[in-house]
Image 1 (cartoon, rainbow, N blue to C red):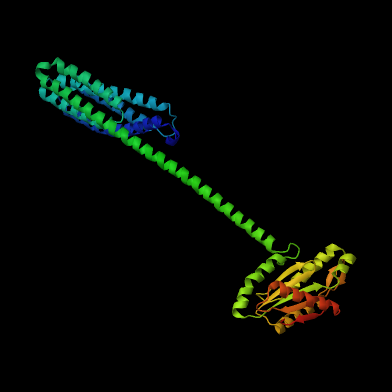
Image 2 (cartoon, rainbow, N blue to C red):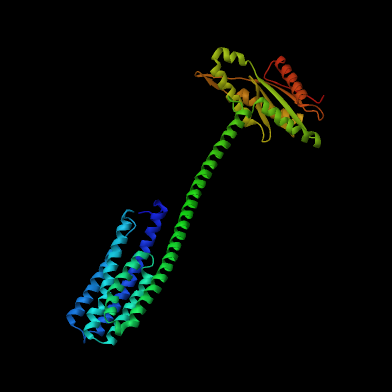
Length: 400
């Protein structure tokens, strides 16, 4: 049985019964020792068969109390709590009657005040032990005290002239025992309630912590998914879908970011516009799918041919824009010539046919105080001149 699944009252009863059974076992061990003491002290003066009968009665009852207490476990259903408690109460009543009968079985045949004194002393100790051992179940304590008192008081009242003070002392002891037992039962109950509340709070905190961990894990997962989505959106916003190069909007934004540094430090930079020659013929003769493959291959050649820090973008259709920072016109010409030769030599395979394409290039060196649009316009003019000059060539535009 899981205590955390019980209602609060059942859980309290369960905890009290568990403590009650544990402490009853300890009291039983002590009472068995006291019973052996009494039996040994009266062995030579009382009837042996009576002593044996009494000690066997005490032993059987108390051993059965121990046996039944070990049957209680956490897997029992909650409705058996009352059954266990009532059975233990009944066994303690039997135990109380057995202890009270010690006056008749042991002391009466001895017929001596000293013998009754020993019995009364041991019974008083047993009663005192019961105040602590049976406190978790106050009803069990009352049942045991009443059973002991009835038999003991009967004997003492029958010999009232001899045991008058003992008679009143017995009731005084019982009163003190009951008061102490009631206080102990309240204390044990409050401790059980406190422990259960702490267990409940800890369990609740653990549950909340698990929920928080799961929520945090879900949040992290969603955050990673969101970051991936943002990266994909950035990529889609910055890259051309077909070629994988930067698109026109992205390269223009990057150029606008770079130009303040170019102006501040008086740096050289060049813009290059290139256009694939007779690209319309490729689409017309081989189809748009073949044209797309040519655009991808050209884009790959351009990406592999530029330096780190250079920016290559698809400017539109079969037109590409290169931004070459930290580059003067002469260095730009050398780089672009290498690109032109790479495009010229590359063979494109379309429908098992070999196809070669070339490109025309226009280079414009950026003027420090000029705008990017004006420099691109100058590069576009140079590209137009390259096409007019027969294509597959480079035309440069010096500073305006």
